[in-house]
Length: 81
Image (tube, rainbow, N blue to C red; front, top):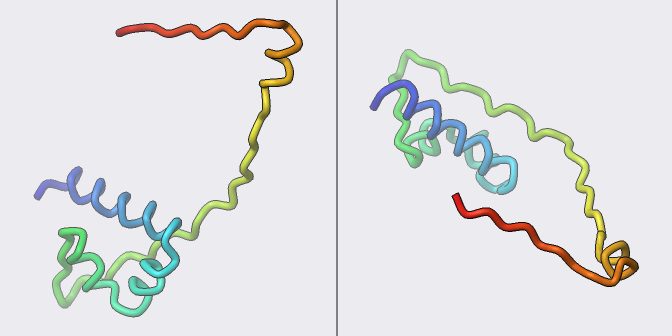
């Protein structure tokens, strides 16, 4: 496996650990095993990387239906590539 593939697999692990607290906990308890589940293997003399903390993101939900109803029409623009 090349370095780019390893980076992608670790990125997937990081992203999943942010949305699945149980995965993050399992990684804290046994990182080598969790890395192996993602196809990443470490040798005995290499330390396992720490998972970065989940970002603190704000969820914003905009409701544009009121504006559309006020105009009396709904437009949709679709492009086929």
